[in-house]
Image 1 (cartoon, rainbow, N blue to C red):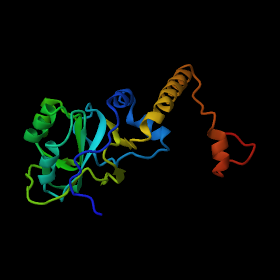
Image 2: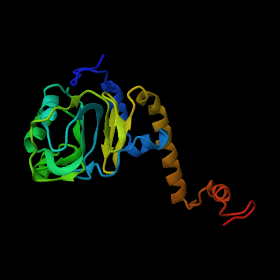
Image 3: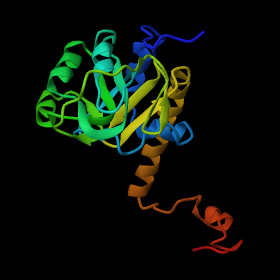
Image 4: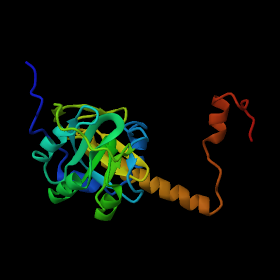
Length: 227
């Protein structure tokens, strides 16, 4: 039995878990999750200072058409991040000031679009977190169906509805909804380990303890040799 194009409800990462996870950088989650889950760098913050974190509210549209994004705004919940598969299209903006104002009024945590936006200066002034492939002054059509609440591909990564997504000036990382809570202790440990290493470097210990063994394994050095 096929599912409807619009799935109105789905499990989400709990708000308490989002709040805990939001304190870490996307890079931390990528490292502890096996260096995977990072969206392609073509999808970047509209301004480097912008950050977001929350459960993904997934939307799939046809290139240059935002009909289903309007439908999504009628269904998304406060704290959600709109994650939109716009097919990487840059010939027309899928969202601008009016829709972003609605997103902020609805309490959404931000917008991620594998596609273009417009009115970037006004969005900058709003200080609403937006990640996109870029900008284009062309407006979209509102004529073609799509899907809401289904798994989508954004920036080369599968995003399921309700998954955890986090972004900053480095880019975006997605973590499976069922997995994010278990990664929180690992994230805390990673941050502590990095802080310790940075302190060691500042004290003059700049050499990486693993480097020689890795160079031998790569065949650059022979066993017993050192730099």
